Amino acid sequence: MYGPGMAEIYEILHQARGKDYRAEAATVAGHVRVRSPRAATLLDVACGTGAHLREFAGLFDEVEGLELSDAMLAAARAAVPAAVVHGGDMRELALGRSYDVITCMFGSIAYLKDTSELTSTLRSFAEHLTPGGVVAVDPWWFLETSVEHHVSGDTVTVGRRTMTRVSYTEREERTSHMTVHYVVAEPGGGVRHFAERHDLTLFTRAEYEEAFAKAGLRVAHIDGIQSGRGLFVAVGDTDL
Image (tube, rainbow, N blue to C red; front, top):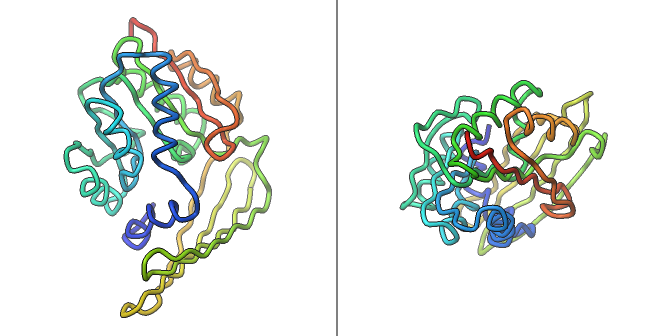
């Protein structure tokens, strides 16, 4: 789970590495509008620091978020003060209301441990949809397209702060174990180092599609976007 050190630099670091939250939110909204032109309310599950949520707020009438990490939750509430951001786990989603759109971005769905959790979580998403609502999930890499050993590194400077991110990801059966080290330096603040580990499940594309179907969601996969991982866009049955 992301801690305070990462929450502080998360958004600015990924933006400096080339992530375009505004463009990604607009792409998701475009696919949603094709399926539900009047969609007005949105819940962003595992919303992190609220970077996508902030952009969704300009595209939908009412947005809310859900985040498990206390540090990221505080950042999201500060980033989008007009939005309700709930603390909680996507596995235990029970907000007592429904939304026209539910999103789960940046591979966060892969924190689910197995296909049983994936199916039950997507079923919970479906239960929180208005009739004909839309679920958009930005997946982690598929098992069949994952790399066994992957190293990535970037150094960026934003303002007076220089940040280095180096990651090593090792695949073990159906899990990618990603260890990430960060070095942050700035005048007057010295140099800080911290590391985090993320265990992400490698579902197959077919397993995602089967889980959506079991949840009562009619799904399509949009290839070639979200850094090559694609995007699942699903429509709920009108009688849910």
